[in-house]
Structures are given as C-alpha cells and as structure tokens.
Image (cartoon, rainbow, N blue to C red):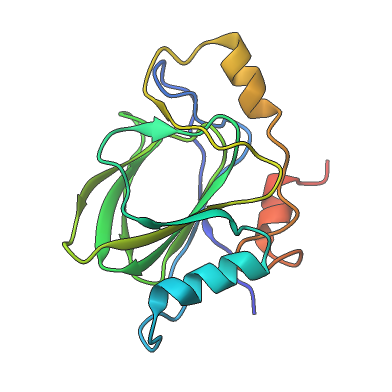
Length: 174
C-alpha cells in the first residue's frame, strides 16, 4: 500500500538554499510504531529495505537551522513529538509525531523548535550522496547551489522503494 505524502517546496531565503526543484515529502502515520516492541529498529529496517540505510543514526533533531548540500535525508519519528521548522526562517512549521516520516531534499533547512523528552528520531540517507552538515549562512553561493542541484536522485522511496511516490514527485515526466 502506498499513499500520497504532503509536499512543501521552499525557495532560498538568503541564509538557507533550500531546494526549489524537489519538494519535502511528509508521510503522516507512515510506520506503525504503536505496536512495535522496538520502534527504532522497525523504522531502521524499513529504511534499509528501501535503499535509505546509508549512515543510519538515532538521536533527535538539532535546535539550530541546518541543511545538507550533498545528500538527501529521511527522518522517521520513533517516539514522542517535535515541532520542526522547514525551509529556514520564512518557512513552515510542522508538528511531527511517532510514525511520521519526512524526506528532506538536499539543501532544505530544518530545525527542531520544540520536542517532548522522549523524542527519538531515526535518520538515514540514500546511497550515492556524501554526508555534510551546514548551518545557516549566506546561501546564494553559486558552487553550493550547483552542488545541491547535482545530488543524485535516490533509487526509491524510503517507505515503498521503487514503487513509491518519491520517484514520481521528484522526477515528473515532462
């Protein structure tokens, strides 16, 4: 079963480049963690099975605006809730809860505004990217924008693999 995620697209704001071409994808209640004995492992296994298991980590979300210029990122909420700002200061705040999954295209600014004490996030990346962590800065840097535009598209959706909506939404036919 697949379903359509919510989508958000953000232009650069002068300090965060964002990704004007690829939308952020938010899958609500994507993974059933309520009945899972180990929600973190359940999310990790889902990401690994769908090609997004590169550099998996367990933690929270940084409280400062940051982005990745050389890879796309997926975040799965295993426990708790968080309010996250997407797209830098003029972006949009979303409430994430256990079971939600969000896919951030390279360049997309994100930061945790608030979160519960039990917040547990699983992060991962598709093969082919190179991990980096950049804070807000003057983002109209031409080499940085070119690097973001050249990050390869993943082979599949982190939840549904090659049959998932990500490939259609990130590579629409003209």
